[in-house]
Every structure is written in C-alpha cells, then in structure tokens.
Length: 213
Image 1: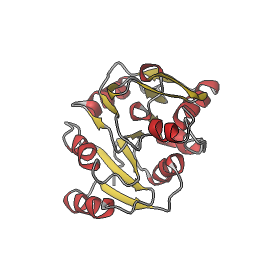
Image 2: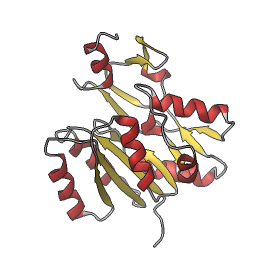
Image 3: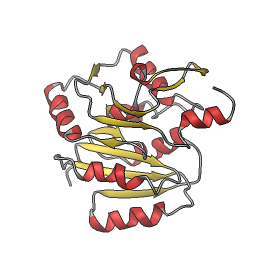
Image 4: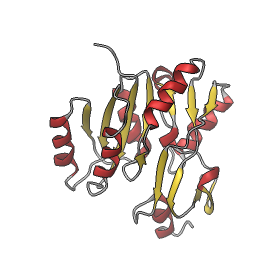
C-alpha cells in the first residue's frame, strides 16, 4: 500500500472540547493524501470516544493513547508510527486554514531538495509567548518557531530521534539542531496555519501560573 504524502501528528491532552475545530480543519482541506495520528497523552476527558467516532468515519485517522509524559514525548510517539513521506503537526487548539496542505504539497514537490520547511502563522489571542531561551521573558509569536508549520522528511526526523526532550521550546531546539547540522531548510511562502494563544491551559498560561513569567 502506498504511503501517504503527509503524516499529520496531533498531540493532545484533555482537550476534547477543542478537538472538533482542529480535526474539522483537516477534513476540510482540498488535499486528501494524508494520515492523521492523534496521540493522546493520557487524557481523562471524552477524547478517546470522540476520536473513535472520527475513526469510524475515516480510515485515515489513527488513535494512540499513552501515559502522560509531556508534549515532546507525545509528538515523538506519533513520529515513530508515521508512514508519510513528510511529517507535519497540528496542535489541538489550532487549525489549518484553507489550502494549507495542498499549497505545501505543491511547494515540496517543486523543491525536492528541502529536508524541512517552516514558516509563519496567523495569531488569535495574545501575540506574545515565552522566550524558549529565557521563559521569564516573552517575545512576539511572529519571531518564534511554530511546529504547526513544520514539514519534515520522515526518515530524517526519525534519524534525529524526533524532538529533543526539554521542558519548553522543543520545536526551536529541533530547528536549531537542523541549522547547526547544515540541513536543507526552506521558509514557507504561505501563512496558512492559525495559532490560538487564548486557552487557559496554554504553555504561556502554565508558565505564568508557575511564576516563570
């Protein structure tokens, strides 16, 4: 059986109330050559039942539940099961805009030399997030790395062991490693990922609660 072009990894934890928006944005895409791996980081809400319903409707949806261990390990669990030529991501509180997958598929086919592409996002909510280098400070999201814009060759991502296991900023740590190793990176010309920074359990608000902001 032919591998899909994209493996979409959606890591989630107790966000059944938000998942329909994220999932709906995948199903509304005009590009169909994908698999969706929902990796549940030990949720105790209605997440499993919700995803099982989606699985019954579409065989491209896979569900993996694991014990709670944090975002980086959860994404890595999805990466280990991915079969697509490229791996990309969707956070449970975000969404793809129209044409997100089709425009990036075309861009990658036009640039087969790219081992990874990444880009910018449309922001809803607070325009600032913690600085991965110093979480006592914030920086504009426009200056940050956003894993929702990552499209990475699956074989390379597996060879690198996925995301580094750090408390915060595993996405920027991965990008920095690729840059240090001289990987062929391209900036996406599309701003087709909508990033919501308005949830009480967002990383920014969690750090505020811990007194790190």
